[in-house]
Image 1 (spheres, one colour):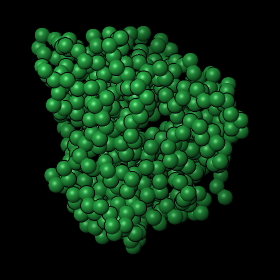
Image 2 (image 1 turned 30 degrees about the horizontal axis):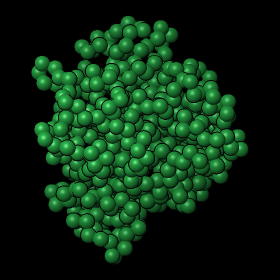
Image 3 (image 1 turned 90 degrees about the vertical axis):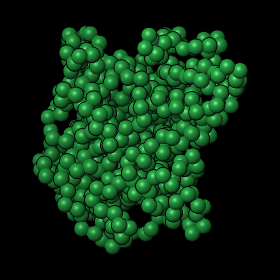
Image 4 (image 1 turned 45 degrees about the vertical axis):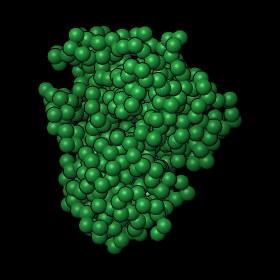
Amino acid sequence: MESQETLDPLYASRLFAPPDRTLPTMLSRRAKEFGDRPLVTAGDETWSYARAGDAAARFAGTLADAGLSVGDRVALICSNRIAFIQTFLGCAWLGAVAVPINTASRGPQLQHILSNSGARVLIVERDFIGNLDHVELGTLPLQRIWVIDGSPEVAAVGAPSEPLPPLGEVRPPASLRPSDLIAILYTSGTTGPSKGVCCPHAQYFWWGLNTARLLGLRKGDVLHTTLPLFHTNALNTFFQALLLGNHVVYGKRFSASNFFRALCEHQASVTYLLGAMVPILLAQSPDSAERAHHTRIALAPGVPARFQAIFTERTGIHLLDGYGSTETNFAIGTTIERQRPGTMGPVSEGFEARVVDDEDNEVPNGEPGELVLRAHAPFAFAIGYFGMPDKTVEAWRNLWFHTGDRVVREADGYFRFIDRVKDAIRRRGENVSAFEVEQVLLAHAAVANVAVFAVPSELAEDEIMAAIVLHPGQQVRELDLVRYCEPRLPYFAVPRYLEFVADLPMTENGKVQKYKLRLRGISEQTWDREATGYKLAR
């Protein structure tokens, strides 16, 4: 019988010495220790610690039989289901690198990710095969496509495809270092295509440990999230459970009407939300399930301060704010007792944070500047952008990671988020590259120039607006432009607001002055997709 100390994150850090902070080592040790205890549930399937370890070793055998080895990339387009866990664990066991892709990704963005990552195998859920419709598969290094829920009659998609093979023979774990890559996660660029964030094994060890510490995880906790596994937040949740011997449940997707019932059904004690999800839940009619659950806390970064007390009073769930990104870790935040609404918290143990000007000089308390971060532990942060050395040097210049977020550090050391420095948009928990949206719109024959920018959302975060200049003599309806974007962009990146303009405000050297467009915002001439009642396909 394990001691209460097992559930102490500091104990977990001592249990896994620096060389042991790889997923195969952590999973092997926990499988022996916890055996039949449930580790992960996705859909109708639950895997124990022992079964997860066996599946990792056997799917590694499947990958090896296909000719894959240490360092090879395996792309994955899959929703929150056990096949995602199987692929992620099998890749890590073999030493291959998982490349989870947003299930909404398509068109030029998906083409870029598959090309840049150099993935030799793509594993895709049958429901998402259509995402490949506007991808030139013949130009990619893909050698095979495995289809989850596929059959011998799987439709041709332009490359050899077959049903996902069964689990193979048990394969011993690869000899890995904590600095070796476990995943490449693509996050939206600003002035260019999406960047593949190179995440080492040790980064997720620290993600799990730091998040568990700040959430105050306890023995027997059940973690429940509907956030997608292709993002770092949900992947981090798996490591929280693994390190502390707890159970994580992945819901299929976020549903405001079913959120609290799912917490009740799975007896969840901890859950995970993002900024816009809280006002969406509060907009629902009160329901008995809001108080019937046993959930005490939610990790909920980016929730506007005005909603926090209301949500806790109505549901009994405390909301923990903080700051982290795909490239970093839980670098800013504190426990719920020390939290101050409207701030992200102080710098977390094991990290350093500064607020700097354009030349990386530290600015005084109370003055806005860019947040830059670094970690004390080796490989607690990502190690760069895959195949983009120039972007890596730019982001990690002067030995600090530049977040692109504008913040203020208060005199007491608490940090307050202001906005983004970079030309990126945050909508419903998803980062959207203005550049990528602009490239799709510019490919339309009628469009001469375009600027895509953020405007405030009535919920939280941003909505997407495009100011469009048409070629002389050309005409196109706004709805037709939206329909043109749909098969070429993730649904969340399709602009809500469109406005045709005669020209765009420009600098003397020809750059669009987007700040002027943001200041102007929505006008009487702006077309609103949601006002028309048009529903985007997903």
